[in-house]
Image 1 (cartoon, rainbow, N blue to C red):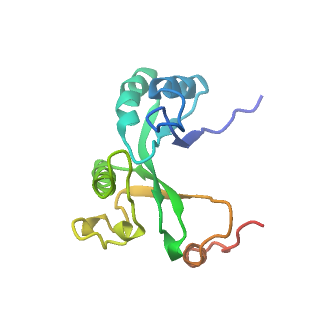
Image 2: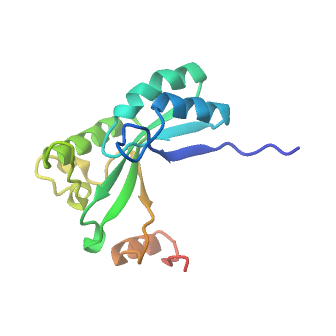
Length: 166
């Protein structure tokens, strides 16, 4: 019987993403280990709280834990709302992601956040070093509807076709 290639889940919300995540971080780690995942990214919305709880369990289960967060940008590229998953690749990336979350939370009322595309373009007055979110891998989550022109153009520059698959 052929062996399956290694698999890592790169977008997973825990119950720290209120009203959208159901399982505790520990349960997610246990399930990922049972399924023999190579790694699991805990990516709660604008929060790193689930990562703290997942870390000890992942260490016990010898599962690689990837630190990340899902962020919603109300006015993304071309003014179109978008969702991103940011995965820290180094300690510096973890620090940058933490700073971006703090910046977004400080702009909004308690329980909400205001993440902006300008933050990632280096236009946040207090955090110009966040330009490009250094030491993080940023994944664009697909949305229903047309892909914003700026995203399509950026993908084309990198060698992608720029089509939406439809």
